[in-house]
Length: 216
Image (tube, rainbow, N blue to C red; front, side, top):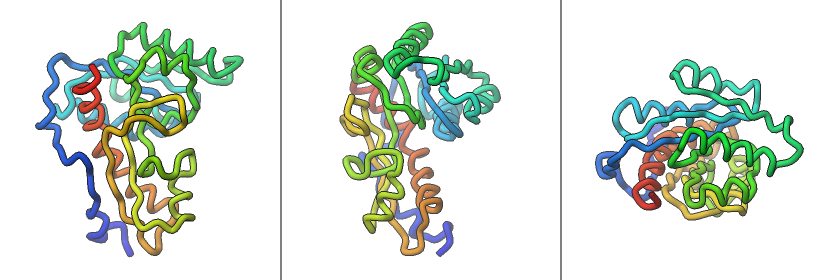
């Protein structure tokens, strides 16, 4: 079955809202954290440019010197700060520097858009109820880095993605928004993840707006 099959569009997003239904006053200042390709970072920037999200991105923090997200930031005119985790003795030292950087840019919300490092209470306490994560499963199912593979191994018929507020327990915290994605009989980790990512791009900007409306 091709990725253009009609079943690919049969995703369920909850809550069923649009950007027009979430009115934000003062533009949000978003601090983005990313480790890899940066497609979710770019989709947030695109939503801002298209007027779907009343926000600005004063800073991107990335921890991998080879991350492609840095090039995306340069193309979009967003300042990118490299905080290489290898340069710090432990996770708390890294998180202290992250907190310092985010405060320097006076951000309202922190968006973990593919941040592939566990964070500590140093960061979580500094931005309590203001850190948003996106994860490629319908939490609380399939936590961790192999969420898509776990879904395939479990032979579930539906998986998806979740935008949630971060807490100390991995891939946990109050859920803001979810999108369900059917698992097809011939899916691989690559094909399933590609369709999940389409839904991630739909719900992340909306989840950010919801968080701002309810937690700021």
